[in-house]
Length: 158
Image (tube, one colour):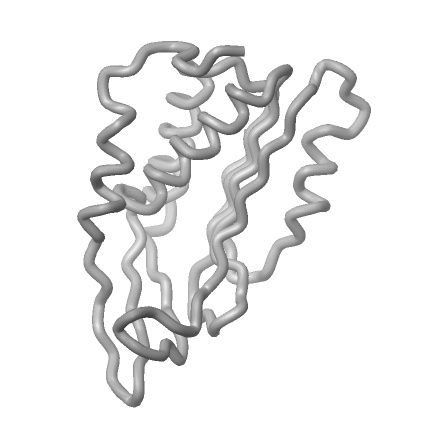
C-alpha cells in the first residue's frame, strides 16, 4: 500500500508498473487519474489550490485504503493526491488498484475515489475571473459515496 501527498506531478504508468513488477498473481490493474478542469457549467476555472492537514490527511486516506483491502481481495493499492496550486490540465489524484480479477479492482478504485471526493480532508479554493471561492461538496458526490454503506466484503463478483 502506498499513500502519498505531494506537490509534484506523478506518472500514472510508472506507479502502475511499480505495483505489478515481477508479479504473476495480478490479473487486473485499474487506474484513475483526476485532472484539473478548466471549464464547468459555472464558467472558466483559472486555477485551483488544494490544502490539507499534513499527517492527518495521510492517516485518513490510509484508513480508507485499509477498508478497501478488507472489502475486496486487493493485491496492491496506490493513492497519490497532490496539493498546492494546480492549473487546468494538471494531474490532481491517482488511484491504482490491483487484484486477481477486474471486478474487485474496479470496485475498490471507485470506493476510494468516492471517499476522496467527499470525505478526504482537503479544501479546494477555485480561482475564476479574478475571484476565489471555497468549493463545497456536491450532492451527487455524496450520493455516490453513500452507496458503499452497509456493503460487506467482496460485493463485486469475481
